[in-house]
Image 1 (cartoon, helix red, strand yellow):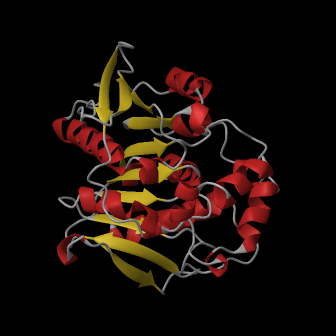
Image 2: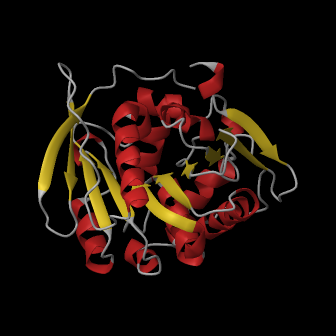
Image 3: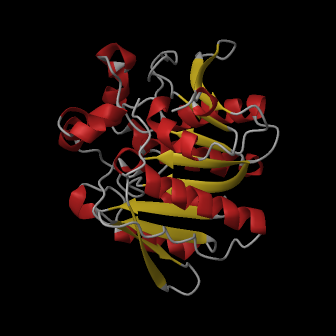
Amino acid sequence: MSPKTRPLPQLWSAHDPVLAYGSLGRGVPRIVHVHGLGARWQVFKPVMAGLQEHTQLAPDLRGHGLSGRAAGDYSVEAMAGDLIDLLEAHCPEPVVLSGHSLGGWVAMAAASRRPELIDGLVVIDSPLHSRRPDPSITRSYLADAPLALRAVSRSPEQLDPAVLEAYHDGEFAAPCPAEDLLVRFDGPVALLQADEDRGGLMSAEDVHRARQVHPRLHHAVFPGIGHAVQVEDSTGLIEQLRGFLEILDEGRGSHAVGTVPAREPEAVGSRVQDAGSGAAASGAARDEDRIEQP
């Protein structure tokens, strides 16, 4: 990764709690990425570098990475409040919010509260309707999966244990079901779904229910890719985000996100579906050009 394409760490010390974030580019931010449970902003470094034509931000959620610890409030609504503060302070124009897992919940909550700050919403494999957490899944994701381990904190002290306690106590479930949030945001939304057979958490039922309330919904599936989409298939995710941005720029919010182009010989498929017609297209992505992991 060249110095010109390397996201830089920043610290917003005036905010309470202090928010750490990564930035790439010097213009008006176009995309803001939000990581999932136990991760840091650096999990999006390959994606940010792959979209270097756009200025981007990616915060550490409170209690994660180098962001400050909170006095007993690790709710999604509190995290969404931090995100809204970041958008108001650093993003003079509406942005595309890209949130993975817990970050998708935070992004949806922020978009439902302040839709005027959001140009488009990308939700990456967030379980949209799960109300009660499964601690065994969390422990497996944080401790057992090698790919996931690259995404999470390099040292335990970079994740406040109270974050996991809040999750296991059900505190993160407040914004669900997702359609209650999506109905308050009428801009374009993309649901990017990992393979349920590989540990993906967004279900077909999630997508079906979301379609009922949101007329500008796009849907893409990453067959063979597990929950940590941005780690396992950063190239495919870059292509999906770029396609979504092109749709927004062209004002074609009712069209499908562009299909990921095929790369041989080691292809991983991605299906994109138009919310209006229900027609599906097939494509594939290979991660041969993966940028170095944080």
